Length: 379
Image (cartoon, rainbow, N blue to C red; front, side):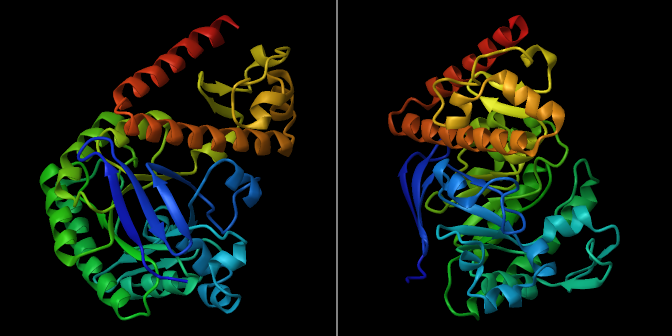
C-alpha cells in the first residue's frame, strides 16, 4: 500500500473548488463532508450504512482513543482501519480541542498541555510529539498538528498568544512527523480568532513550515456566522491553492455552502448524528423537528425523492412517534437520513462547481429551505 497523499485541484481558486484527495485508503472527491466517529464508532449507525450514505472519509478523535482503549492497543490490533472495520480514509484530529473543551483541569505550557482525564481523573500529558506519535500509531490517512483552540470572543492578547504557541507547536509536530516512517499526510491548523492580521500571520507561518494540507481551526466556537465567513474570506487567500483546505468542526448546511463559496474543501461536524438523535432531520425542505406535535398524524415521508430509504419509506407520524417515546430506532433512522442529506448536498455542490453553476445551486437550495418553512408552518 502506497503512503502517498496528493491533492488534485480540478476547478476553482479562491471561490468554490472541485478536487480529488488521494490517500493510502482511497480517493476523496472534494468538497467533502466527513462524518464524525468520535470513539471509532458512529453513534447509532453501522459503518456499512455510513458508506451507503456516500461518505468517502470519516473522522476519529485522538483524545478519546488515546484514553480508551489507547493508541498502543489499537496499533497492536492492526491499526485504526482494521480495529473499526473501515477500509476507506480516516482523518484524526490532534486532541487539542477536546482537551480544551472536556477537561475541567488543564494547564497549557510551552512543552504541551497537561489535563485531567474526564474518564478516570488521571493526569495526562499531551505534547506535540506525543500527538503525532499517537496518530501515527493509529494509522491515520490524515493527521493534525496539536494546537490551542480558544473560544470566541477572547481578548486580543490571548488570541495572539495562543496563535503563536500553536505555530511553535506546529514546528515540533512537523519535525516529529518527518522523523517517522512515511504514512499519510500531516495538516497544519491556522489559528488567530477573528483577527485577520493574526490569521494571515498564522497561515504564512504554517506555509513556511510546509504541510500537506491546511485546516482553519478556532471557528464555530461561539462567533456569529457572518464573523466565521468573513474570517474565511480573509484567510483562504493566504493558503496554497494546490493543497487541500479543511474547516474544522463546521457545521450546518448553510455554513458549509458559505464556506465552500470561500474556497474550503473539507468539513466535519457531529450535527447530522447528534441532532438526529434529538429528533431533528435535515432535508431539502430545511430542518424538520420531528418532536413537534403537528407531525403526529402526518402520513407523508420526510422526502419522497431522497436517496435515503428511511426518508422515503417511513411516515413523519412514525418518526415522530419514535422520537416522542424515546425509541432508539428513531435516532438511528434520523441519523441516517441526515448523513444522506449531507452527502447529497456535497454531491450537488460538486456537480454545480463542475458545471459552473455553484451560485445558482446555492440559491436553489436556500429557496427550497425557505419554501419548506412555509410548508411546515402550513402543514
